[in-house]
Length: 357
Image (cartoon, rainbow, N blue to C red; front, side, top):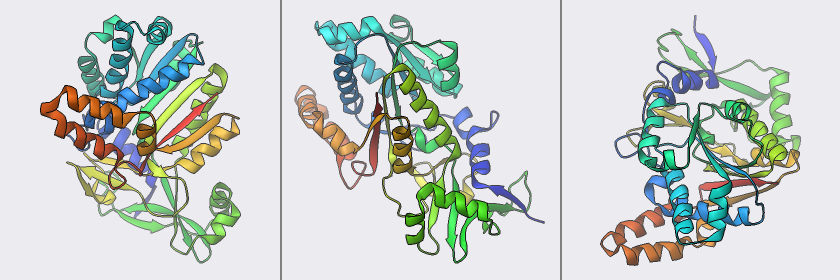
């Protein structure tokens, strides 16, 4: 008899098992890994974020805890710290004041990536006493942080496991994974659960009766309980401590009810049903749902495309300057920035969700 699992159970086992989980035991990033992220494509990504945080600090001065969660190989954190450090060496008073009032923290569960992060951050690890924690909750609790929180993440949110629900002619039913052998996950396949009115009502409440009624038969609603839990925790911390959070990821702001669950291995997309080992598993982010959480805490919030964020804050001008200063790498620099901002690549699909008090 087939065994049934929630999709999130399969994802959590594949990604977060302490002994074999993809995110706990491997380095998935870079050309030799399975995927590459914006900070690895261009330093401009981190430089623009650094400038944005400094401008926010100008109007919200005081003690600050700069936190990145899921820092990959440390390039984003390094570029932010390097940018602020360079400005301070030039006598920029805002940067000097920021350094005098900031503590640096990285939240990372993967010991392999922790080691790589420390290597790539080099002198800054000891110079600024950068602290590492395994999870966000422990950091806030154990460090007894009483300062404003400046929280950043890039491609963190899509790591949280999702479940899927499918619209049928009698209502919403959960999509499950059936296997012939639970240990070996043999012959995995999608099945729909029997209709359950509680499940149906749960989906309707999440997306609203009006939106649910417009969804066509076969529509797929994706929901992450763990992401919702984390975002509530993050918003609560911003509410209590003050500060700002910038989360960049790929996702949508309106419900198209598409199946966005995907897996990547060696920079190639593969079927989720073939990805239960040694592959990155992600789904697009429901920014509409995250924005509702922020609003429930009476926080300010904004969703902006990566393209608009980088261009509005001077990314193009910075790219031109870098090309002049490094003329031999000018073509590579320009191509990298184009990849981040082009509507045909990452520019429109990737978005920043910014919340602040």
